[in-house]
Amino acid sequence: MSDSDRPQVVEFWAPWCVPCRQMAPILQRVAERYAGRVELTKINVDEQPEQARTYGVMAVPALVVPRQGQVILRRTGALDEVGLEAVFAAAEQGSAAALPVLRPFDRLLRSGAGVLLLGASVLVSQAGWVLALLGAALLFSAVYDRCPVYRAVRSALTQRRKAKQRDWQSTHPRQRSEDE
Image 1 (cartoon, rainbow, N blue to C red):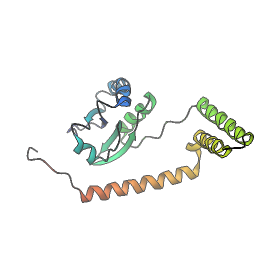
Image 2 (cartoon, rainbow, N blue to C red; image 1 turned 30 degrees about the vertical axis):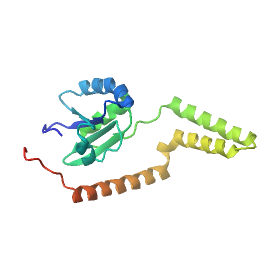
Image 3 (cartoon, rainbow, N blue to C red; image 1 turned 120 degrees about the horizontal axis):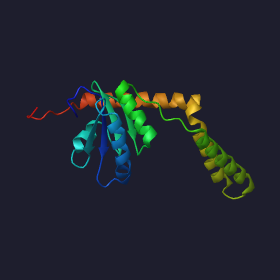
Image 4 (cartoon, one colour; image 1 turned 180 degrees about the vertical axis):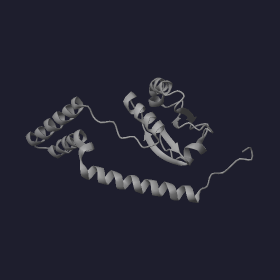
């Protein structure tokens, strides 16, 4: 990565990745707003696959915020400007960013669509269970960030993933080149 003392956001991308290309101008805008405070490092996974393996990147685009040898934040998939701002703010503060909160309109839209699908599942005799399942999933997506069970499960899974990553890093120390 970088030898700079400034916090950094590392983007793992590939030239063939459509979401990477779509996110690029927004990422650049956000990086310019944080210029001098947070450094953006871009790593092409096709040219530097060992870096992707080191940080456990399995899909692109991926954003990683390393701090003192540890990954404090990881986001996979294209993010909008609000999500990118949260990543850069987390890098600047040195802490993990909270997931962006759904806007009230988005919650209402998801809730309404979920209720409609649940209602339709009652009216449909065949494959009504599919509509019920989709409706329940949509309803859950409207409130998941407020659900204490989801938070507990997510926290446990995050801790488990971090423990596996630490174990992997301890058994696979970084290979240093003779140039360093």
